[in-house]
Length: 152
Image 1 (tube, helix red, strand yellow):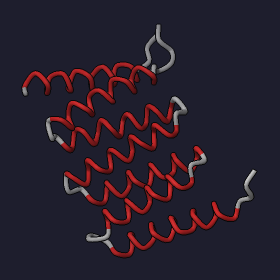
Image 2 (image 1 turned 180 degrees about the vertical axis):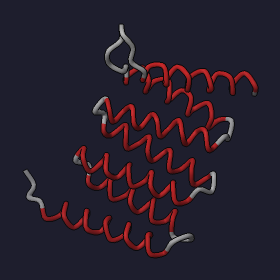
Image 3 (image 1 turned 90 degrees about the horizontal axis):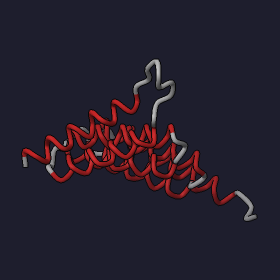
């Protein structure tokens, strides 16, 4: 158990190191940061350390977004939302689902984005019915907008 925690912390540190720039390294290495953050998130999730798992998934989503792998970014943000939900931080969980939806929309996956908005609405519903309603409305608008597009 302790070894797994050290492994996860080491992966988070390695991911952060790949994000840094220096005199000899002019650009962040987002691909390797993504791999490290995914590894850390998996370790933290197995340990049921939800706040750290959520942070690692969120950083993995950011790294995937920087690599322009939008579907993976959406998936990682969605996983972060799930971890925040399990850690009882509902507002942040809904925010992660919104980021997930934005990544999916940008990738052209309207249905997956709308699904992420619905998941976020269901998570935040007990805490804020108004915010849940807004997310449901955005999901419906996305589905309606997708139906209006002609099939190419």
